Length: 192
Image (cartoon, rainbow, N blue to C red; front, side):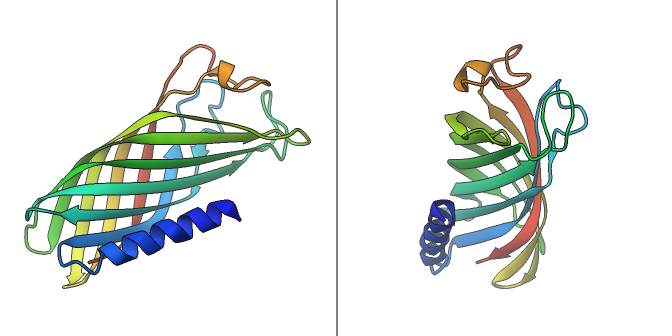
C-alpha cells in the first residue's frame, strides 16, 4: 500500500506540472532485462510500468523526473524456488533533449538517481537495498494531437550497483560483478 501511495503522490505532483504549457507527463508499460549470468532463462522482467514528467525550459531542452517499478515471480530452477520474488523501484532525474520534427519527436536523456531492489525468497522475510543508478537512453514520441502523443518506444541502458553483500542470504550472480549493465524498454502515452 505504501508503494501505491508513493506512486499516487508522484502522479499528483507530475499532474500539477503538466498544467504548464512546456511540460509533459508520460506513463506506460516497461520491460526490464537484468544483467545476470546465473539467470539466463529468467532475467527478463516484463511486469513493470514507468511514469515520467519533463519540464522544457527551452523548446528542445528540459529536465526530467522518472519513476519505474518492476516485479518478477520466479519459477523453480537451480537458484530460485517457485514463488521467490524480486521488486525494483527507481527514481531518476536529469536533462532531456527533444527534437520536434513534425509529428515525430525523438528524445535523449541522461538520468541519475537511486534504484531499490527487494528480494523475497519464498517463506523467508524480504530484504532490500538501495544503490546509485544511471539511465542513459532515449526514444520516440508520435504527436497524435496538440496535447496528446504516443510513446512508440523508449530504450535505456540502466546501470545498477548491487552486490552479494547487500543481502544476508546473498544475491545470486552478483558476487562476480559489483554492478549490472541492464536495459529497459517502454511504450506508453504522453500528455502535455
